[in-house]
Structures are given as structure tokens and as C-alpha cells.
Length: 205
Image 1 (cartoon, rainbow, N blue to C red):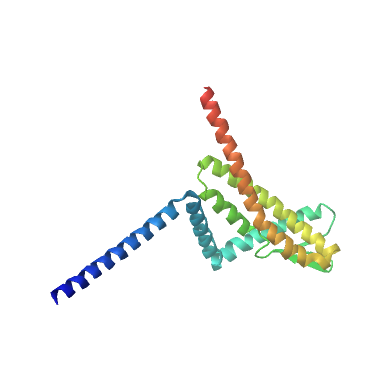
Image 2: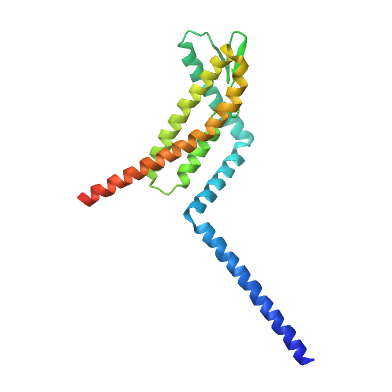
């Protein structure tokens, strides 16, 4: 009887060691996965984007930021359209002309594209000086492209209303996911070139 109990005890000890070993291996695998630079950047990027959307859905963000950004784009794009002698009516976040009007709502304000750009640059390991240049240049590019989008959609709605929805949701929405990613890749390439130039300059000195 004692021998049988001893065998059961040994089996339990062995199973316990196996469980501890499996758990230790799992922890090691997780640690290795997280410590991988690429995986680490992805985790940080996803975390920052989740934080952005948590802020984005709040009433304060929608009323104080989204609405004001929409009004800014309506005002600036309306002013540019007026340069072409179109008597466009600007009311809040809307542009009107004859029997057509366009409103700048969520998705047309480039805020999500800006968030992708911001999070992508922040999580990439580089000097803050390079991050600042990338954010400033990238943000300026996105603002200019978004103004072009709004103006092109305005004329699209006047002269080619049949393809307005296609251009609005099928083309521009997709492009504004692609644009920040392309800008980030160009920024990384530029930054690597700058670092190489700085390194060669130091070596020559």
C-alpha cells in the first residue's frame, strides 16, 4: 500500500514539474515574442490606436475637436473654391452651391489618418528631432491632401454626381488609410539616410 502511495506521489510530482516546465516555456515564448523589436512596435502601435479611439468616441472629442476640425476644413476649402469664382456657401462644416451641398463629417476630416501617422512615428525607434520633423511634414501633407479631397469631391458632386459615392467611400476613404502608411515609410527611409550621412560625417572628422 505504501509503495502504491509512493508511486502516486511520484506521478503527481512529475506532472507538477511538467506543468511548471510548460508554463515556464510559455512565459519564455511570450517574453521572446514581445521583446522582438517588430512585435514590440506593433503592440505599441495597436495600444496607441486603441487609446486614440477611446478618446475619439468621447462626446468631448467629438464636439471640441472633430467639429472644429470639420469647420476648419470647410472654411479653408470653401475659401479656395471661391478663388475660382464659385459663390460657395459655407455654413459650419458644410459647403453649398446651387442644388448641391457637402458636409465634412467623421471620415472626411483626416483625423484617423493623422492618428495612424502619429502613432506610427511615435512607436518607431528614432531621435525625437526626427520624429518632430516627420510629424510636422506628414501632418502638413495630410492636411493639403485632405483639402484637395474635399475640393475634388465638391466639384465631383456638381459635375459628376453619379460617381460621387464611389469617389467618396470607395476611393478616398481607402486612400486615406494608405497615405499615412506611405508617409511613414518615406519618413523612415529619409531618417535612415540622415543617420547614415551623420555617421559618415563623424567618421570623416
